[in-house]
Every structure is written in C-alpha cells, then in structure tokens.
Length: 146
Image 1 (cartoon, rainbow, N blue to C red):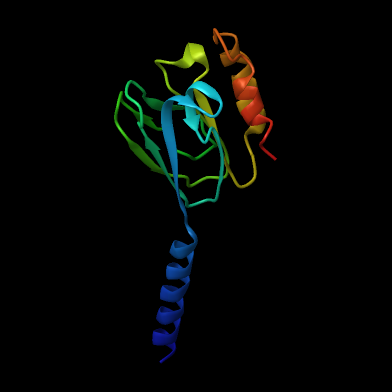
Image 2: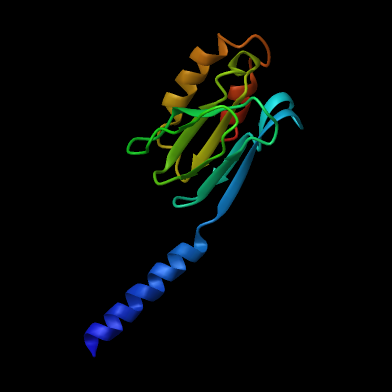
C-alpha cells in the first residue's frame, strides 16, 4: 500500500512539473518592432524546463548560441531551419544569426537567476565591436536581465 501511495505521489508531482513548463516561440525576422534583422522577442524570460522554438518566419536566417550557462548544451540550426531547445540550466543564453551578425541580429534568453551575466556582458562588448549597425542592441537586451 505504501509503495502504491509513493508511486502515485511521484506520478502526480511529475505531471505537475510538466504542466508548468511553457513553450515560447522566437521568430527570425527581416523586419520587426525593433528594426531590421531581429529575433522577436529579442529578450525572453523563461523558466527552467521551458521549451524554446526558433522559427525562421522570414527566409535566410540561422540561429546559434554564443553564450550558455554552465552545464547547458550549445545549440545551432542551419539556414532556414527551425530549432527547438529545452532550457535546462539557469542563467543567460545569448544567441545570434551568423549571416546577419553585422546588423546585430542577436537575442537573449534569461532562465531564472542570471548566473553567468558577467560572461554574457563581456561577450557583448566583444561582439558589439563587430556590429556595423545597432551597436547597442545586445547591451539593451542584456540590460533587461534582472
């Protein structure tokens, strides 16, 4: 009887945890609310365990991680291909469209506590030097991390 109660409780808790996980969609756009060559939303606050779907809404975009928290897997999708990831570690995830990096096509996902914010800020300084336009875009997104 105790074994069945423990098993039932474990199943209920597992179902509750899965029910709380959300799915977020990030579009890869030629034009958006923040200008040209953007991810939308460009800053996203997600919870550990959430699913993120990168959707090539407009053609000629890719996505790859630049900074991920310790223990998280780097991610990448080729040109015009969607990508789905599950964020498993707390921290800051910075990603880019390699083709449109000179136009600062970048984005930020915050998952829980921003454990690696300093690393992301340092990378932003380095990356911003390569941007031909929108040089403050990544810093603007990182400033939303709390």
